[in-house]
Image (cartoon, rainbow, N blue to C red):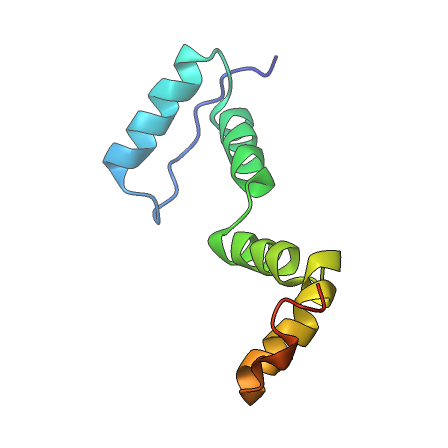
Length: 89
């Protein structure tokens, strides 16, 4: 456990926010820097919205066996030839 060290607040951090974070770290019996490090680690392991979109695109847009089986049907529908519709499945 780290000791509680009183330090000068960062001038870029609003006083009310600094007070709230110091209170939370005290309730957790942690220094403010240790408390913030844990919070930052929890944020870092979460995927961002852009990372989730990229992952979903990879998962749902990759070819599957079924998509290869449907290729003749899709080609016949887009070309307008109905002779191959579902007959080649």
